[in-house]
Structures are given as structure tokens and as C-alpha cells.
Length: 344
Image (cartoon, rainbow, N blue to C red; front, side, top):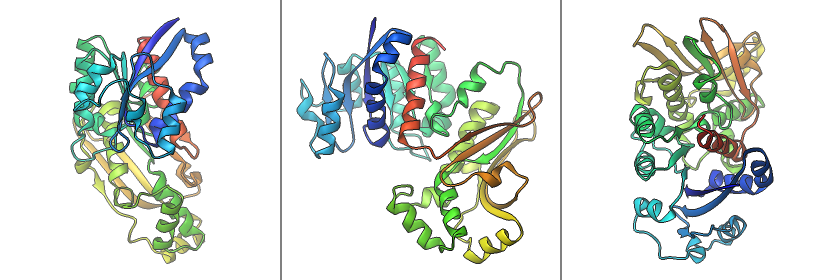
């Protein structure tokens, strides 16, 4: 049995779901892969940090967070001054990074990943920012150190998108993709089909935790744009920034527009598209559009997501994820972790 020490940078909903999944899958991981994971460090923006060379009790860490106490009470040493010192003190073999996304620069997650790679750790993230803003640099850094930089959970949570194109589909040429990549706007448009105004739908989405207090990143297309940029950069091999994606907001969609579409047998969806125009040129957009019943996007309801890739040998390869949550994102992190350790 190989013991593998982990450092968790971020311990919000996804980080906590990952901790619960580690406990739930402990026996299966040991039997199937021969790994025993221990978490030697947790650092957060709001809940302090903890380091323990013998491993932090994840059940206790979750209890401490739920009680509103700082994680420092579980630590065997004073809190490090910064994330770099934290990673050094954790002596981990892999870092799991779940800090909030920065659509415009990818920081500070990029620096977290660089620090982990420089310390000889595998770097696993659910953060789209580093994929879009530093993919080539971080991938090369990881390869030079014999480590992996993986990010399956960055787009569509735990659905196997990046790993699919990393190995099982050799010699494929992807020409573009189309899909629904933002759960929040899809949910809001669904509520509007049921008679809610835009404002009422946003408030309901906020009340159940689907929309942020400031929902502009979702409703103005930034979240979808950075996902389009990530898929374009990695799968199509054409680096793209979210600022280069043509965006339209759903703010102007009215109940009357939604009703009119339904009468015509259509639905409003925020459609994410990227099409290759040449070796290095790309046309990319995030736009509310009416889709017909013949489109696979028509049946994507609630917080579900869908992406369809168009290629030379598989004209319409679609991946759907039904109503994901923190648990599915946590699984994407776990899958990447195990694959990194196995060299896949």
C-alpha cells in the first residue's frame, strides 16, 4: 500500500465534497489502486489553514468548518505566511487546487500551480483560469519535472472531456464544438418558460445556490466564455482568451420572447460555439439563441450541460451531464489525481 500525501488549496463546497468523496472511496481506492491518501495540509481564504505530517482528520475538518471555527485548531504548527510556505510545509505529493476562478488573469491559481510543480507535486485543479491563461507554460513545467498538470473538473465538472481527447481518441481532428456550458443561465431560462420574469428567475436561482450573489459572470456570459476558451485552447489547440469570445447576455430575454419561442416549438438556450476557420483561426461565441426540437440542445433542462464535438472521423460526438453539483466536480478531481499517480 502506497501512502500519498495531499495538499488542499481551497476548502469551499468543492473542496469539502472532495474530502467526503475521499472518505467514501477510501476502501475502493486501496483495493483497486493500492493508494492510501492522507491530507497533510489544507489552506483556505476564509477558514484558516491546518498542517499535520501524520494527516488531518477530514471528518474533523468538516466539523470545524460547519461550526464556523478556523482550521488552525487542527494544525500542528503556526499558519504559514503564504501558499508557497504552506506547500513546502505540507510535504505533499499532489496538490488539489479549488480556489475561485479569475476569468481575466487566472491568478492566484496559476501561482499556486507553479509553486506546487516547483515543489515536485502533481497539480490538479478545478479552476478554468490556469487552463486558459497558462496552459502551455504549466503543461511544459509539469512535463519537465515528471509531474502532471490536470484539470478535468474545470469544464462540465467530472465529465470526461479533456481526458477523452488526451488518450482514447488518437489521430482525431476536431473542427469545432457546440453546447450548453453554463448551468445557471440554462436554469434561469427554464424558469422563465414556466412564467417567471428574468428578475424572479435570478432570485430563485440565488435562493437555491445556483446563482451567485452577483450573478453577472453567468448571465453576461463570462463563465461560458472561459469554458469555450479552455476547450478551444486544449482540444482544438488554438489558444483563446475569454475576452476574444463574442458574448451576449440573457438580460434582454423577456417572458414574451420565451413564450413566443415555445409557441413555435422552440426554446431559448445560451449556445456556446467554436469553429475552426483555419489552422490558427477560430470563430467563438456565447449567445442566447432559439433552438428547434431537432437540436440536441433542446432537451437539456435545469442545470444540465451538453457539448458536441465535430471532427473528421466522429462528426457529432456528444457528452451530456445531468444536473451536476460539487460531488461531480469532486469526482473530476479524484479521477485526475488517480490518473496522475498512474502516469495517465
